[in-house]
Image (tube, rainbow, N blue to C red; front, side, top):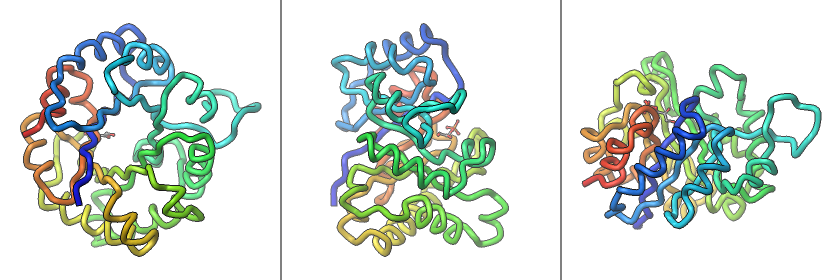
Length: 250
Ligand code: 13P
């Protein structure tokens, strides 16, 4: 089954509006020789400006999170309606930093998934285990729980545009990348879980991205793996030349 590659940059809490627009200008130099979907996820503050700066590029613009209510007295939260209003089309949900630092449980994420789907945002849903969980042999159990409870109540049809990102927590921002074999093994396991949960057709078509210390000199080997359909890049997505090299992986 051929799945369109998906290369995404999560800018996290970096870049002013001006820096964000400059970064988009730098990314226009990528050839996109693999005909990948390219997504960038700036801070909320830069979403509108990045949407405007990306006009004509085909870049998909994502929020890094959204709340599950449409509006109301929820100081500091940003709703899917507001995200859509910027022109962004995608949203990252369940990033491990959201899970570990800001209390995004599977139950909260399930509500966020509902709200994002309700407003037609394409979701990049993140899963992944901590080092302790991996060493304790719990990787698959943890990820299964994240998938089953985070995506509970939705059909394959409702989730047809969903993208999964596997980001082992121990590989995020640590310089420790999962080996291509570790990524492949876990992606294959995730595809099998999704086949059980949402059917084989869904599982065969869904794109699963790897994230965690992806860089120019490891992307080729990771992307060569059968069940790796793309990458979700943090640090190296902030430097145009580096991210362009990742976009144009071999
Ligand atoms: P790094 O690429 O900086 O390890 O971050 C990965 C990540 O968390 C992307 O969402």
